Image (cartoon, rainbow, N blue to C red; front, side, top):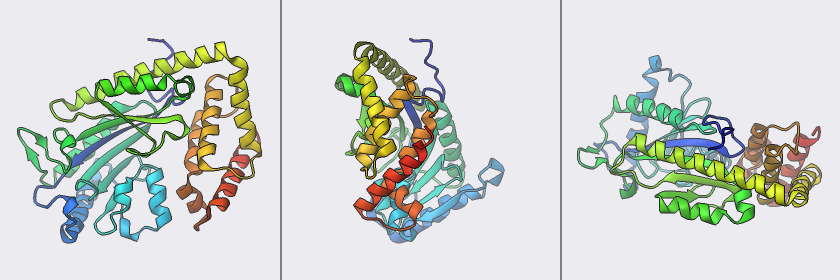
Length: 343
């Protein structure tokens, strides 16, 4: 294993973020799929109260939002920031979300299950994310009765989540594997060992900006620790593959690589209109240029912020109103030029 690969929040040019999600249901209520409005509202109240009542646990600063009270732009922005899923964003009847000020700990309420605890951290921090989610799980479980079976574990709306109810995932930036075509081998490798590979916003979404979300599929018959360890080991292997291919591509095709990277930087500095798809593709090349030390003065963390900033929901939230496509493309280009003007 290359010595330069650290197993922490470094290497964010490859590992963008780590997320751990726990699916839970309350024993005394029907599952959310039945859309029982009365029960749904009670679930939201009880979960929120279980969190804020434990102030000695450091749970100050949590807020609750009902999906029906959010504007379309706010819902879209929350999906883009991975605070809620597209499914929850469409549950106007009973959907709610509880989250902390840092937006690193989120509890989705009445999505597919009553409770979806989610801990999100930058870089490769799976153990830390698991610790944060587990602590919140213990707090909620101390106040409500979960639907649990001694043989099968936690009971969930979808059979694939039964057992631990744990889904761990990493968001990976893999431009070199994508460019070389070796990404297909990686996808087959992941699927073969029981991992799912999805796009930026989960199942059915595109691999925009060369971003791939990898998560476990099996939750029954394995421990939470085994899930975390397996995903971490595979992530480290994929990181090594990506680094190796980056080095090989730059060695074999230096002019082509430099042209692609600098061309993207030039377009971002000059464009007057740009779609979110093209912007993410160009920013992916800029990240690669930073990693290869071709581009100086820009941090990987800045690029991650720009990617979040240019999404349709965040873009319109910054303006404070809905924008039609051409106006969004124009505003996106302006924001990126402003960010890159001194680089």
